[in-house]
Image (cartoon, rainbow, N blue to C red; front, top):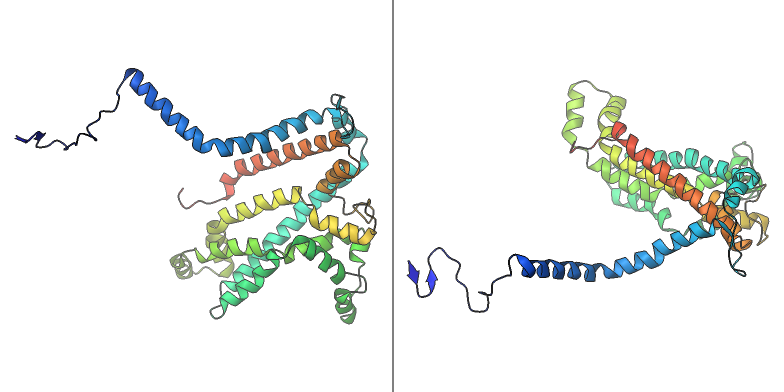
Length: 329
């Protein structure tokens, strides 16, 4: 049945909308090409930024890592000499690797455990929880340079912390003046600034269903069993995220060590004081590149760091299936 020029059951079309889309052949190819060009036009700012600020610097640094380059003369090709030098002739390189592994293996777990403990306490507070959350998060927004300088004062041999330790009859470490206590001093700064990790762990704890705890209580589970069997599996994705980002930050650890060693040594050219105990991988890379202008050697250090980070991240992703519980399966 027709009503005017429109058939019942068909979509009425005006003269403007009745224009037929090209189907098949050249018309279809032209339409697909136009869509691709539209997508590329919208993505072009990101593509230009990626090529100019990510891919080109990476390729350039890879080339410079096989050269001797000091910014004043053209790069000179030396093959694998920089890599051979750092693995076999550079004791500071291995010292920086050991210090970086220390901060990853001790500082990062300590930071996560402290953030988890604070989140477990705050999640049980019924009144004024927002105030305590804010207080616990505040250190995370303090600039790292300011935090480093503040702790250089607090952990001064004659500073307030040692004053309290002395009043309690405990020993007074030299902290950043002693190579054995310098890294524990940095670990204290990491733990103090654990607000970001605390916030995401707190959100994960608040998201654990209460009925699971009630079911565990009915089964006679104690506090440790509830934490181990209910809480830990359900917050394991967040713990995994905190561990992964913490390890990446540990590999790139720089600011606090730079500030502390500069404040202790008082020499603009000396980093890693005392006795290279604060010489981390990022600090040594910075000193080679921007103090000594050994750009080729610094590029080799940067690529070793990139490959190590890539390998550790890949291992964590592969092994996460064994200990990370995702509620969606």
